Figure 1 (cartoon, helix red, strand yellow):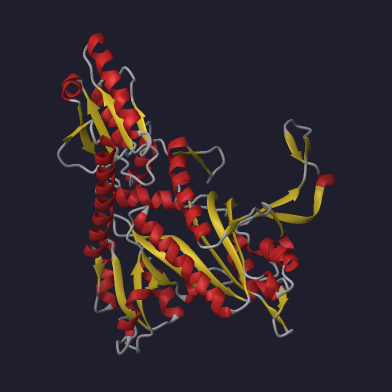
Figure 2: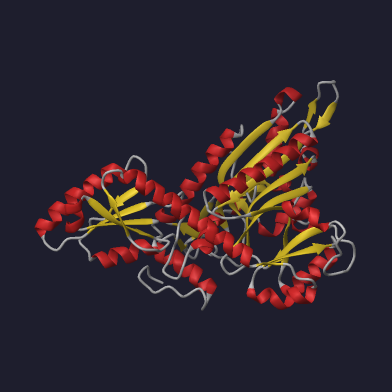
Length: 491
């Protein structure tokens, strides 16, 4: 699809609509490597704004950044049984360190360069980080360690979708070490809170914080916390996770510390992360049949100024005024002047598809009135804004757009959250999408059976709803409920 091609309506084909929006906005392309993507500048700028905000939040909570190697010895993954089982089928493995010319032309691995031990391209960094923590931690005085890493990871995927699931993706992964179980659990829940606030405040996503069921936990974790977001079609998307790892990795890598009492104990651990799939979440939660819709907080261009003229004399006056407008806005917003010699309608069409939150139109009449015409990407009537006080008015309008997007997404979530009385009732309604909040008796066999029959999974046990489980019976088995659970189909 070219960037000028029409976008498939959501109601016709939601999956194709998603891909069309990405293409029309110029966010990403498929690469020559199957399953991998090229993130184009407009898409990468979105990630940069997410990254910068999260990085500030991490540092405000006492974390620091570091970097660990891309390559991990295969033996490291073997040290933690659940971890290796969870990632074994997704690992890319390096077996040679050079190529040679092949007899038939081209190149091939040089047999003499075979590595003594194969290396895995990191699917996640717990193993190599805990190897290093074993060298850095001797005493309680060395704790806690609060490190975050911005990196790429590789998980070999057979079925891929841009941003949502690719063989290589960008993310951050926090890895912390603590003296006590309570400190580690506090860290895991604190970071869940950081992600929740970030999603709501920056991405305009009304996420649900919760706890994963045992079968959905991260490989090697004792507890996995998550934030779940609802897309416009009612499907769920896991938007971030925070894991309480207990002492599993400390024991696997023999990481101990001397306590204040002089005894030696294994360290307690957490890990937590979000990835570029958040871009996919924003697209599917907010965009429309015209194209991309972006929260102003992460929009690469928050305001586009579009001049309108009919002749050279008008152009000179309009462009001079546009320069004044840009100068007034530049200190507080990300503004772009589109001075290309194109018809205004073509410019409007392009910037709408790119999701720019606010468009300012300026023609000769506006110059005379020392004002601009403002059109919000979220719709509504255009409104005039005088040059005097323009920066404050634009900032207020962007805040309004941000709030509108959150309110819309929340309304969608609330309208499509159901409380079925029976499993049959949920099964009949799943094709329409939605979150199904039900009393549940924890049973891995029953959970797998429901997944096989309906393609719905337990997205989480929502933290705020757990008190409701008391005295209830499971909607599936009739046994006493152990949790309130959200079932949904998910990306």
